[in-house]
Length: 256
Ligand SMILES: [Zn+2]
Image: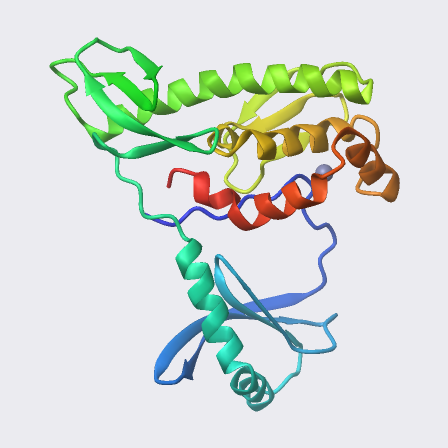
């Protein structure tokens, strides 16, 4: 099971320069550290980045391996520390069984099996899932039922928040569709449709609101210009803190 990555907001990079990525290894204090080495024609210096995916080294096209190794040696302590911090941020692998915590609006609901056939409902801090005699506690069936319930909940929640912020931004409330993207929280289409990742319902309400505001502000400005961010700030003065939390911790709330 692969760990979920923190999805990004809309707009991928266009016209990326020529680059080449390879998987490399380096030894720090007897520990092998794997990293992705990305060489690019555009890059002028060597950069180190650490996030939930691990260590990435960006290097100019012709940078020698010994130059890269020297930089890694110089920053060995920082690399070990940052990797350990990200490791601690990783969510435990999720398994579909009774007692598992299903994240919903940033809070865990304990997955509870009942014999009410095909009913999924919230009861306090429990998520009760009805399983029939035939289905039992088959993980695939549980996953399907819980996902369907999360999607229903997401649709209602997103529509309500979007109607609220449409009034704040003075735009027409868009039609909200759920997306299943692994790498995007939301997308705003030029024709006014807004797609929001259903997995977002697992994150705290403050983060959902940030994504909703972000996408609705694109109905004002279809880019990431200063004017766009001014609209975001008008609707949500503390958006920077929320954006940062979503970037750092968004993936923690997602089911694997
Ligand atoms: Zn955007």
